[in-house]
Length: 70
Image 1 (cartoon, rainbow, N blue to C red):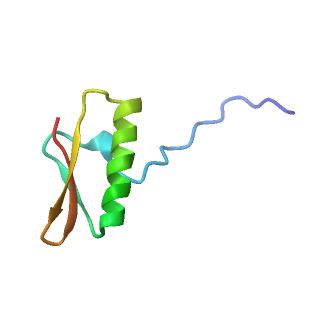
Image 2 (image 1 turned 180 degrees about the horizontal axis):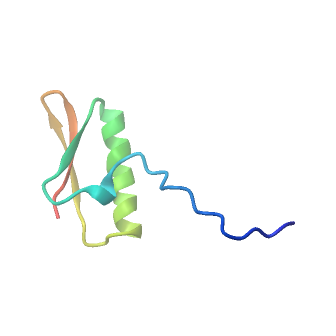
């Protein structure tokens, strides 16, 4: 097995912009399944990266919206 140096790590694979969100920011998801997926991914992001952050998923007029609340 060859050892290689100076290989950069690929960008994050997260499809949601959690690391760019400020409290009060949100994004819209079109289906309940996508909303649930985002909520679970947000919880995982919080556990690994930002334990003090909180997210909230709510049904809105045109889909589901996930907010960063803290």
